[in-house]
Image (cartoon, rainbow, N blue to C red; front, side):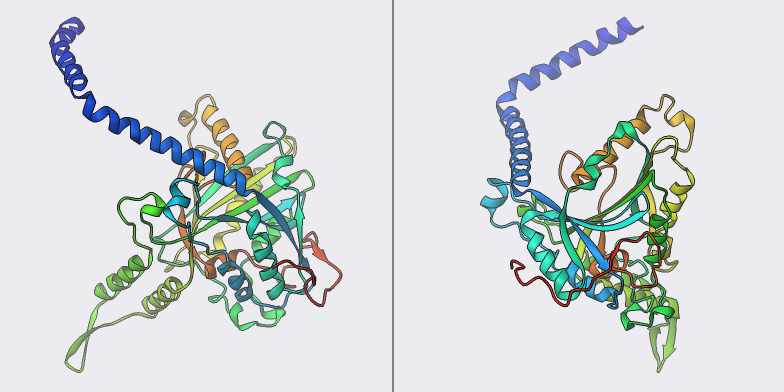
Length: 406
C-alpha cells in the first residue's frame, strides 16, 4: 500500500522540484536577501546593545517617605524614550528603543529596590529620583542576579499577563486615594502586601520581581514594520464607544441617550484617564527560589497572591500567563520541559531580555501599562509598610549630591 502510494505521488513530487529549480532565479534571491536581512538586523542590534552597556542601581529608602506615588509617576515618565533616531541608526547601527527594568527583590528577607538601565540613562534616572526624593540614596551596585547559579537552587518562575484588554487599567493608587496624601494611619497602599511577602522570606530564600518596560509608540518602518501599527489610544476610544453603544437607552427630553450605571461611568473615566498617560510595553516576571532543602511551595502562592490587590472586577488585573510548572503529569512525563522553562526564565531575567533576541516575546507578548499603573506597582512606601527587614537608611540628606552629573 505504501509502495503504491509512493509510486502515485512520485511524479508530482518530481514535477514540484522541477518547477522550483526552473524558477530559482526568481525566488532564490528573495529568500537569500530575506535571510541576510534578518541576520544583519539581529547582528547589528546585538552589537548596539552590547556597546551601550547597562548598570544596576539600588535605591535606599529613608525611614520616612511622605510623598504619594504621583512623585514616582513623574520619575517613570522620563523613561518614556520612544525615539530610535534615523533610518541609518536603525538599519546600519542597530539602534533600538531603550528599555528598563524596575525590580523589587527579597534576598533572604532583606527587601531591596533596584533599577536596571542602559548606562547612558543612569544619570538621568538618578537626577530625577533626587529631584522628587532628596533623602533617597542611589548607588551603583553589582548585579545581584549574577551570583545565583541554576544548579544550586530550586526555583519556580512565572510571567504575568492581564485579565482584560490593555485599555482597561488596573486598580491604581488614585483609586486607593493615595493621590490625596492621606495620613499614614489612614493609608491603604497596594504595594504593602507585596513588601510584606518579600520581607517574610527566610535567610535561605529569595524572590525576585522584574517589571520590564519599553516606551509604547505608533510603529512604522523604523520599527521594522512594513504595515504601520497604530498606538493603543484608538483601541481605548473604540472600547468607550462600545460601552456607550451597548448601554440601555433612556428617553431624555424626547432624545434617546445612553443610560450608564455607576460602574460603567467609573470604567469609562478610568479608561479615559489611562489613555491620557505615557504608556509602556510591559512584561512582569516573578521568581521564587531557595536551597533545595529550604524550598517552600507555599511561597509560590504567596508570590502570585501578592498581585491580587491591583485587580478590580470591572477594570483589569493580573494573572499568570506562564509558569514553570504543568497541571497534569502527562504534559511533561520526563520533566525536561519544566527544566528548560526554569533555565530559560532565569537566564531571561538575568539578561533583562524580552524585547529582543534571544528571548524576544518569550512565551507571550507584552501588554500596556501607563505611568500611573507602573507607579502603583513600583513606588516607595511610607511607614505603612512596617516590614522589619525592609532596608531603609537611618540618616537624612538635606539635598541631592552637589556633584550629580546632568
